[in-house]
Image (cartoon, one colour):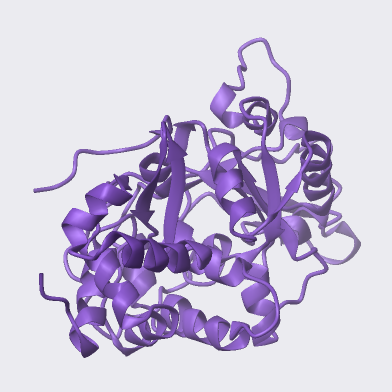
Length: 372
């Protein structure tokens, strides 16, 4: 079987990855990322891999590589998080990583000497933010279904006879569903740190993974194993710091929990900075202002991670002037960045997420039939 070489293999890799969870408009910025992270040989293997889980024996047939050589290539890819390996039954199964959640996160979670972390941060920033086409292709044109959803902090929910917090809305329930936990570097904060754009005091080590995902992260030194108690303490600290809990958008067995701040985290910046209100599937709970108890102190407006709360004057004069907090429930007025190239036809995130493809038993919470 012939193998792709040169620039063609990276163009084909771009097409392959564009068929996963997130659209990847092709341009020089994406080409630079792929060429930096993959060797030509590694790119060729990923191009020939099925989208779903495959054993080594299956990949020998689909890629045309000899088993020993292929195993070495796969070991290099999984060490970088560019391919995910999961032990199922009596063998490892392999699946390509998408850009998000996947290539970006796993690359920026790597730590140690000799890594081109600052270069990677600039490359991802140029493609995912500066260029504009990635946001337009994945979050624009009224798209409703995304790969992440927001969990409420349970302590903030008002108790009522009619209120039931469903299991998939509870952070505590997620921890109760598994027995292995890992915490690693937050890819977004790590990127912003190397760009000189991190302005918060949130610790870098905040990205949480559960179950089989934790096993993958631990085996490849992308995160460290922690106890259930330490994970619970991390969630409690995030609550105190006003961080937003975002998980992969599945009903059961969510594997990744991001603890997001307003200055670094890409999903929140997609709303507040780039004007894509549907970049995250919101929780089923809506923040409200208690008119009787509001003192217009401004703490809620300062804490809001997407700048959806403002202190608004009632228009009075002098000592009689008062102000109240107001929650903005419409789409942000920010104009999305214009893509340099057309991202192609719009589509929702209808391909199964990485949690569904690589870590079985995860079922999408919001999904639609894939368009023809």
